[in-house]
Length: 494
Image 1 (cartoon, rainbow, N blue to C red):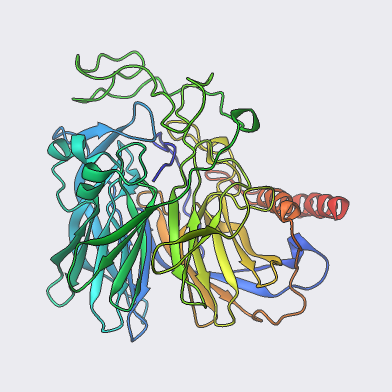
Image 2 (image 1 turned 60 degrees about the horizontal axis):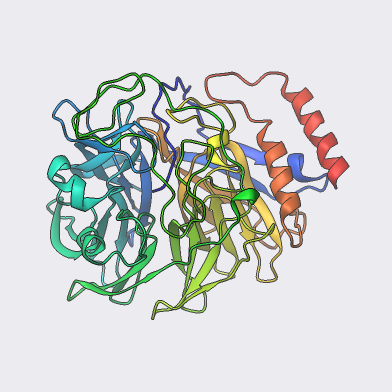
């Protein structure tokens, strides 16, 4: 996925969230809103990602692992973080979280890539789904150029879809090789990068969104292979409308074979030097910042909608402008239509989408503001990395279901029996969680705060509310005073 780096030491304190209940009305208005509660189902995970339920209610969760330590030389430059080594290891897994609360490992030691030395932003086991017959399938991410990194990383299972043998805890038949197809065909015509990130299964066909190749894949599960592929549209935006970071890359990154020299380092003689230029489709030769610009879609979430088509959510492109992330409707023939315009009524950095039984759409914002504002290149957290979940009714009315309050850098979203499930701290090693957000009161609760289009006010209120949450490594102080200040601001803008 096209994330920025979080690779410096982060002394995050573990937040005990056995059951956190928050009144949404305390932030979004004086009317009593429905009470939602967040509970942690699994903790201490390495980059948890997408998941599915079996017929008995057990959850099968992918964890992308923490990569490797780089001592074996299996490292390449990260495609999204300058100078930060992306190293391979066998630290990914498929977990089972039982209805009794137990957690067990179904398949250990799966391939994983992550930024060293702290194991953030991993790519590896990315999604798991059952088909209607109960057959299980595991999607493996990649986050790199298979044509150049493959021989170095030695991770042949990455970038593929597999059938899974749950009885023996092993990968089974290879269904599709997205990485090789990207190398040979490059469907979107931009850079050669693949990262299958999420999927859904309809009948006997898997539909996979790829945040590296910027496409949706269609593959027949029984016969295997890739049936069809379609690229998501590049979003034309004048660079004058974009806001860019002004910080410099980190200065102390260890040199690794085949990597560009770190600032002040030696590096290899054959390694490229200097920042990459803008990719195809971007006007201008370079920006004033040492960061690449890409207007690619970066799709990260997919779900079947009530009409039988699919809703796809995108993370958007660097520098991840707020309000620019889009939703798409895609039919079974891969015809793509944008359903949310790219103006002020858009979203920010989406990583999940789900529908309830009444047809309401829920979308997950990985962070509420552009991630570079919150995390420096190299990993130092300088802002609020709170996530939020927003419900979109059929008439376009939006309601923020959850904002911050322990939900941070989340990814993947599933609705089941009146509750939402998501992987919390999904880009962190040893700190990831699977959480459940119970929607007590349901969608018929008349006290829920609703905001008509456009949703710019929701974005502002959400940002103000997020500021009330304590940052990592610090205890929240003067909570009552902060809440009063937030309510004063909400009153002013309302």
